Length: 239
Length: 239
DNA sequence: CGTCATCTGTGCGCTGTCATACATAGGGAT
DNA sequence: ATCCCTATGTATGACAGCGCACAGATGACG
Image (cartoon, rainbow over all chains, first blue to last red; front, side, top):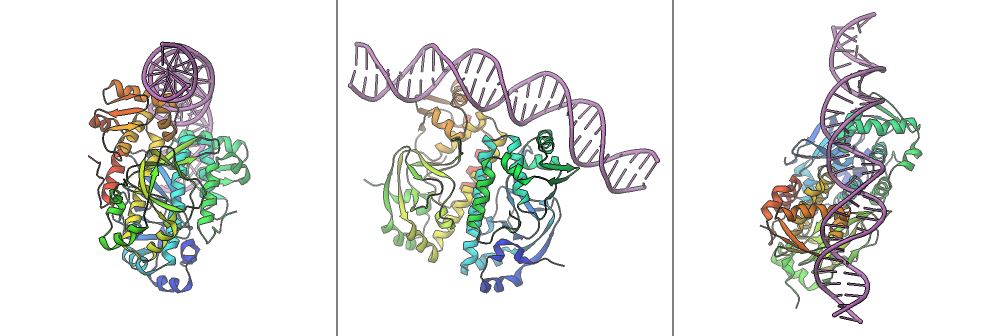
């Protein structure tokens, strides 16, 4: 019942020769909501290529406050520290939307990395896209309103999911954005009253995608374009 | 009158064999205050290994508002998009503290990258450190006070400079932090009254470094430790 | 020596977000 | 059907940072 590994953009982008070498080493993994793929400072055992799940990269402060610094979906991989050489990161990876993925043992990736060409360039390019997202998140945190950031977040998530529905409570979104739950309630209410979204107890339906795009800040577009530019295999769910 | 290229941590960390191959291709460059190394979307012609300058990576919004997402000093390099494979980035690199560095032609780097081992791992590790700084910046923007962020910024800058003086107006700092100049004035006043720093028209002297460390948020320490951990060649100017 | 641009200090009202507290409502479990 | 947990809506006061306006102070330069 496993889904196709090549739903993952990075794997799909590999030339046949490299793909055949890699495929037998991929392990299918279930990713239920809330599953933690790695904790800050823990050596990574695998790199995860997502097919249907969404994973949030979170920075958690000492006082427990947290902020999402990037979203990863089927366009990318979780655990880039593995090939970056640092072994660990100060971030935490949590499944934000249940689904599946494939993982590759740390050693296998390193072997691959030392001889392969496409795989490496593929991953490096993806890394740059991820970096762009992180930077844009930082700027967005500084300059844009919660309303705009919520739109950005909804759109970025939607781009990584099939359909037009998100399973996500306002409490969780608040965690992702690093704001209060009440703030998200207010912002979401505005969007609902404007007829852009509809939600009930953790089920958010995007009614008017264009409307969201008009309300969000430039950050969404910057990130989207950069992903498109850098990743040869385009995001299937993207408009 | 050129300074030693191996003041740069990445170059210093290379094994002799690779260093000898690379050295003749390095070009010494002057980096006056305000010099722009690259603009968003412009293909990079060189990678810059800094020896004595400090460069800010800025994200500039459509309305002109900007925020620094990372600081680069003699521990690193500017233009990582070159080897990441994306060719360009949405960020802007501006010299924040005048000094010098060495640059390497894009093609030379790529040639190097394709056959070299240490150089690549060196750069990848550095990239991860940079990523950490970006992420931490994003979280800091979200959760910490301007007072704390100013301390963080001063410390991060100081770690990349000799001595204990910064040449930097409050206006410029405000630009880096993405806040109002007046806000920086107020925060700086507090620090001066507490006897931690002393400043006059663009000259900031750090009087009590420990005091700043006590006032700043955890973000500074996280970034510092991660740089230390990832970069085998330690930062010379660091405490 | 005087002028002027630049840098720093201060006040004021405004807005967005926070902290806290509490009210309502959907929907699953029994 | 009932209960209860979880999700969502609302109010209130506090406060940080913003935008704007302007004053003083320093130092470069003619």
